[in-house]
Length: 388
Image 1 (cartoon, rainbow, N blue to C red):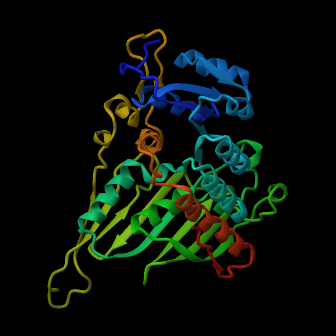
Image 2 (image 1 turned 180 degrees about the horizontal axis):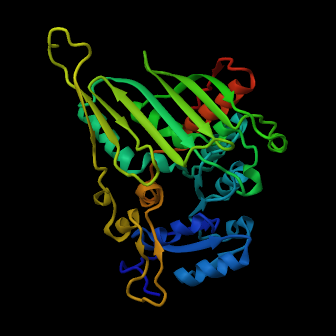
Image 3 (image 1 turned 180 degrees about the vertical axis):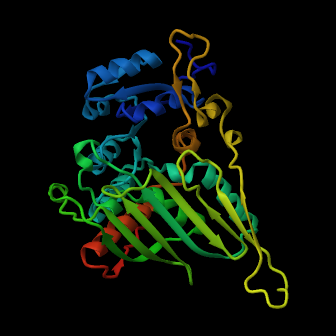
């Protein structure tokens, strides 16, 4: 196995990655990051550990998080583990004196969100929620368009995440859709630079009885309207998990006075649709301002990353110098993975909070938790707590 070209320094970070199903995709990114000295891996499945360790030439492997947390020289742990474990594991990592990155959602109760915040502050270590949706090529392009002023005043935002979870691991069965809504909520709030303060949400559809048991949730689909803390602005979010004939999509749309940005309708189509409204005197008898529609290429933003990990925004050969061990990796979630890793690592090195810190993570996650509460109460308005 060819090791990264950068010379490892003894003061580089040592990171343990937990969960070798989805988590294996992050291992080569950490290995090649110039500020990371060593990577360990964690999974209760020994076969998975052996497979990933062999591919990436990993020296340290652990069959439990507890085992890894006893290793004194790990600086950080990245959790890519089942949703029900996130809160307890994040607290354990922080209490062990290690920085914590965690896949979404942060937790599934408001109390656990606050508990993670309290633990982070007591530990003094960084917590970052690894939200892919705000590091995709499409999000980076939309943010750039909004910042340029070309869109004009934002008038409305919409997020949607459609996914069928049949035959997924058992903890997904009957999960309240809005408990896993950050992929749709976070890009809207991030673009608007806003916080959701109130929500009205309704459940929709009929879900088979066996799926009601685990969480007491009867809804395959939930749809919400959120009031934001910016005057005259709201967003709509819809999330489905079962019994809804729609292809997989994680999407967000932004509607401005001059331009609108819409995510492609079909997964695999990377280029968003831009609607432009031309502000000009109307011809006599014409109703409505004229407009245009175009697909705008969302460029790959490797320029924002260190050269050693930039290529992981796109799928490619991991080790093209050794064809017998070469395999494809990278490109996950529209190029977002190396951007997240870089932000987490640099926040530790620079001794600052990451962008998606414990408070922002709680705000984005609480919006979905409160939305499900509203749906279970027939659409009653629910105030979303502020975390500070």
